[in-house]
Length: 189
Image: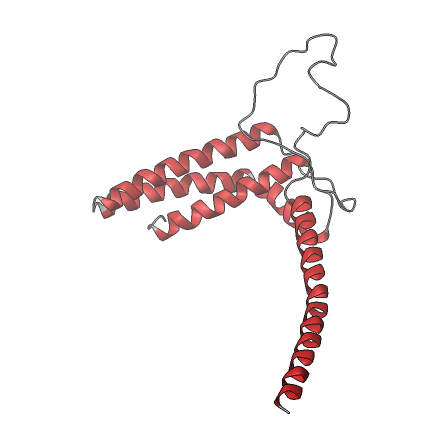
């Protein structure tokens, strides 16, 4: 009698094992599908074309005559963002404006870092003064890009196509916002 009940348990155990394997299979497949979807979304949102995947061959070898080389800018401008046609045109945003914003941001960062060193040394009033100087640079940036940033905000909310310069502006603006928070937290007014 004991042998029958143990054999029944084994048989039941085997079928239970198979049903668990069958139940795990859709979960495993679902996991792979989810992973693939995440990778696709990440690839799409990571910035698109960086200029290396060319279908037209090498760009340097194609021109017959040498064109004068422009000085490299400080701010990298990559592809824009596709979307609907904007209701109104984007305000002028030149490479010079982006470079100036980048330079002011670097100056503000340098001033803020020196203020942080003063704070570590216990020189609180001098540190606050340096942070206030850094905030002045941040305010200059905001004044410089006030109109373009308003247009970008509207374009982003309404799903408009965005020019490449505005994508670069958004990256710089993100860095500026982080620095502005740091300056504010360290006493900059």
